[in-house]
Length: 368
View 1: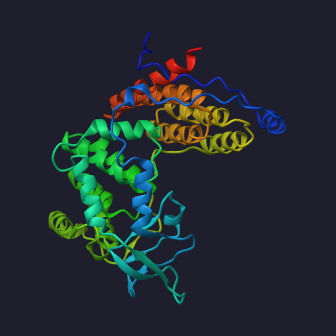
View 2: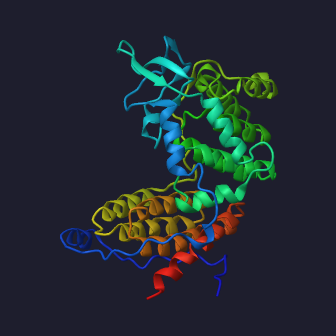
View 3: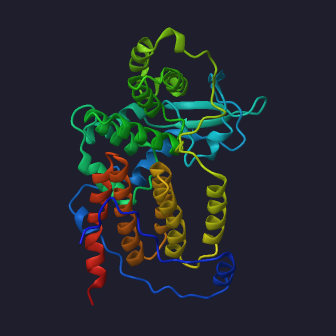
């Protein structure tokens, strides 16, 4: 029987204290391997541009910003961004570059590094956009299948950006904004998501924020690597003169994480449970501990924080044995759908479909 979406999410059956966690760390537990199974609902869907291929495309067309970077300088030209120590804290802070060899510096007075890009990113990215129907009719089924395969834990901003475009074309600009922010949380140096986020912000009258995003889109679009110059100029003309930011843009406080309020008790709970999770013997047990953080935020009416912590838990499951991985992922994705539905988020159906797509795995694992 389907659970009432208005009901609070069910807590995971994993009660742990720091003392018990320490004891668990000393226990020798032999995990029984399960036969890997392909999600039944995803069979027959193309795997082109899956997460692994997207990671390769990203790595081949840019350079990772190292921790401690204070400037971004390409071929002697410093980008007008007051930077970026925090940018290196993101999952994939890749600065995209045009085809050719470039000298890139990250600190004043330091010897630049040579970066060679062998292929044309506009060609590769353009082919990806056409495959997913961006700009015409976004192929949400293809995007959904790839999200389900990685349990909504992406390693690049590409597909989240395309998914946001799909929501925007359907008129759900708030859902689109959440997708673009998620894309930038993965790689805050990705110009297309900055430009798309600026469009969302302009539409809801957040002109100062929109102006910052337009400047970032322009500054990070090195050598017009994404072919965005025309779109950036068009969006800049729509921005009121009083909100056009001065250069350089200050990115030191830049954050695309959920902005919902956090209390001191929330921070203490996060510290305790994240610390306890490190003592879990199996990845699925660690995921259960982190999943209870998500339930806490869902029950206290902070859906974006809840979704973010569910994804942290799902990231742990990617290293778990297949049977518990898919069983718990299905449960968590279903809870994420309920959280979205209660909050009025357009992503509710998306998470429900991801959850249902994993049903075949559970059926196959129950067979003798």
